[in-house]
Amino acid sequence: MIRLRALAAALVLTAVSACGHRSGDEGHIAVAAAAALHPRPLPPAPVAPAWNQSDVRALQDQLRTAFGDSALAKSGIAIVDAAGRPLYLHRERTPMTPASTFKLIVSATALHTLGPKFRFETTFQTADDVVGGTIDGDLYLVGSGDPTLTRDDLRAGVAALARAGVHRITGAIVADASTFSGPEVNRFWDPDDLQYDYAAGTSALSLDQGTVEFDVIPTTVGAPARIVTNPPSDAVRVTGSVMTASTTTLTITRAADKNDFAFDGGIAAGGEQAFWRPVIGMPLYAAGVARSMLRRHGIEVDGGIRTGIGPLTPDVLWRHRSEPLSAIVKQMLLVSNNHFAEQLLRAVGATRGAGTEASGGRVERALLKEAQVPDPGLHIVDGSGLAPVDRVAPLTLAELLAHTAVASDGPLFVTELPRMGFEGTVKDYPLTDGLGRVRAKTGHIDGVNALAGYVQTRRHGRVSFVMLVNAPDANA
Image 1 (cartoon, helix red, strand yellow):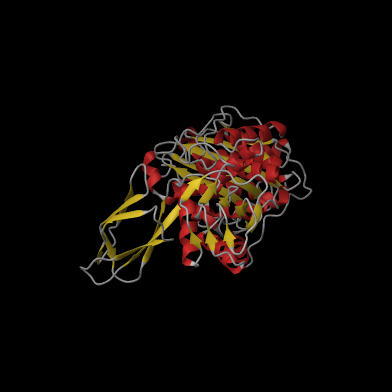
Image 2: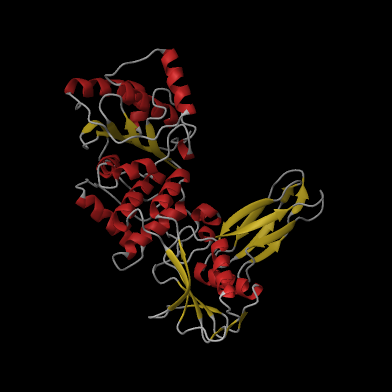
């Protein structure tokens, strides 16, 4: 069995205390209690004495003992100091499946390429001025890849048009998602994942993270529950029924090639429950939602919905700007949001002319080359690490972390990672001396258990660490 939580705790404890002062158990308890009351950000690496050979040997001995032969047989490990010099290496150049630790590459690339202050924009545009409250022609809904755009944002845009006096659109609602190209759904993802919100597709015009919400409202036991689609959409069809019962046994299955959702099973009596499922054909879906919202605001729409390209010299009627990229990356790493990662990969690809996964992967490789980070066996097919065929060597991630931490936006990048023991996917990892000193990213898919991030040591500044376990019992 591979117990990565215990291994991580051992790594953190030894890395923090190696060659430094060790307190007794009472000291450990005091440190943990103080950190819990006053969570500290991981600071930049201070000026610290370099690791000498004796220090490194002591650290390596401690880690070998902590990891054990069983874990080492199935792991790739790389630990480097603040300058990227190796401290502990084991199968460090072996390409391995990274799961969600792959998001570290797209995070560093997006911040480097787009900048932490970058904001995505979504707009309503027309080819001509509005005359007498009428848009004579089409209304264009133009996306640039915002992974955070919600139906509430779109509803605010529709309200802005109504306040501006628009009451009729003689043409269609045209969705422009041309900033990105290629299939919405990654062909390397496990087909079993495609029914769930964490595997929503990718589009330059993506609403509610590529999903539709179903609110299932129980009634009395033995009677049918109500199913409400949110937002209402003509593109989404619901079949089947759900009974109110003592327990929830609900299943929702989407047809392979359309937004038909079949409901079956039961929902527990009591409060309503919400379920999110991915939609396909996101640009048309978003255009349809926009048309419904316009009509509910009393704005007539004579035409239908279609995809197309916005005007060359548009009249922008409404502009929505996302939060800064730094906030998007922070949220992505906190909850390991796959959709954010996929949108960012295509967004960085679009800076090279093609908003595709392949183009985004080339930008990632260019960053690694610029940083002189080795990438043996690197294989990029997505940004999130959801694909089992992604490959990266532990040394690649460790040296990227070390390089990025000392780059111009390094302190920002370091603090984008969640604090182990306090928040996000690393909240429940057991730490003692390391509490408040570690920021890290987890990774889990079938047969993969991974952890990567930073430790602030007492004597030697910051170290970067990566542990990738690829084994059938990796998540046991």
